[in-house]
View 1 (spheres, rainbow, N blue to C red):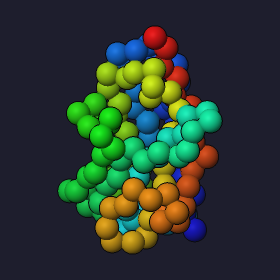
View 2: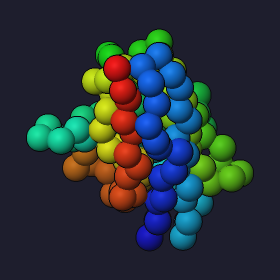
View 3: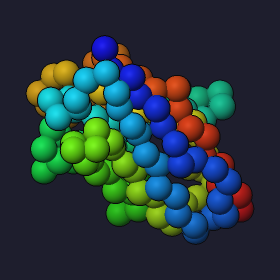
Length: 124
């Protein structure tokens, strides 16, 4: 079992930045694909970014490209999401997820473990 706990969310003005962290426990995550998803009120869960075991491969949802950066520190068992140039439409609960497969995925049900999420609110 892998337990995931997100932190770093909060209220920020449009154009600002936040850095989310996802701390894992129970197992080391160096053999897990890690990803961030988000869900806004009344909307479906949406893929944001994913990162390979080693961190050498990443994938982003189109609106995140150029603004968000996913990274990982396997020694610390932690994954990060640096979010810059935030927009009001980025407001959502952001959750991290772990997938024991080999390839990056945008599909939520392919992920085995989930955190509870952290709220990000961007004011205009």
